[in-house]
Length: 128
Image 1 (cartoon, rainbow, N blue to C red):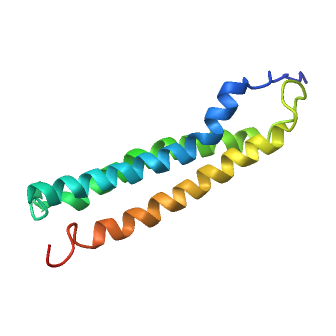
Image 2 (cartoon, helix red, strand yellow):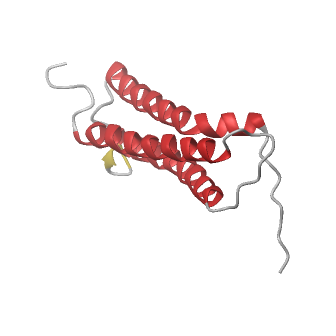
């Protein structure tokens, strides 16, 4: 049986992967804010898109668009945690993989928790 040696990750890729979950979460928050601000500013909170309320549909699409890359980051990170540790280039290779997985998991939870009320509650509030 041949053992395959996995090259150590590049430092820039490690940093970007660790921050990916937090950046995607921030992008989702920005998208929700922009969608609701546009709907309220233009008076389009009751508009329909394909027979469905416009704001919840757009927030749902934004949520799906962010959950896909988050799932990919989680998949590759969890796969990397199962590999043998290759020393060299990184002082704590398991920590960076664990940190990336943890931030991505927390970002998934945050995206779902901020999308749920944004899809259920009125976009512009009552009386605005």
